[in-house]
Length: 214
Image (cartoon, rainbow, N blue to C red):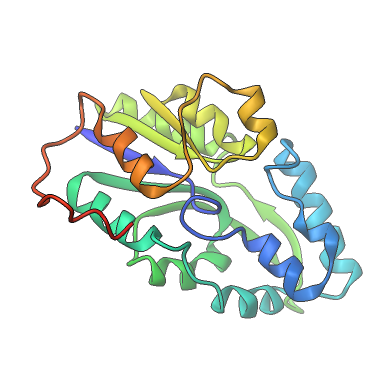
């Protein structure tokens, strides 16, 4: 059985930390896994910056409530879920995800958890599992699934390489240069074409032109 694993930020929704950086004017918070491959180092910097500016979880959540999926993401995901099984593998956090999952129609999400202090400040984070994206794909393959995976950042590369087929979606230039072997899509129609051109793709029942909405 075919199963598609998608990254969340940069693939279906905007980058949360970049959106929060714009809202607060704090340039340091613009850094993401597109810029810093070491996720722990990145999160330590983020937590320190939040503390320095006296920002709490509620401040981030207010910004997330205003965010919408990327244009075309919801119809693409809806069409994908009608065709095959889909799991979102993300390094975001339970405390961030709910508004975005609601706007995406409540897809299945594997992610991490923030540790919140009594005053509502972010004091630490807990990984669901180290190398969680890669290990999730390995586990699903061991269950007999044929996995296609889609991501855009350094923290997605391991899952793209371990999947049966891996694709980059709108990656930054440095990732394109470092991983030229990975097929690339810059829009959802191209991504759909890459996924559905695989010989293991399920039979679909869409009428011609029905995918033009993305």
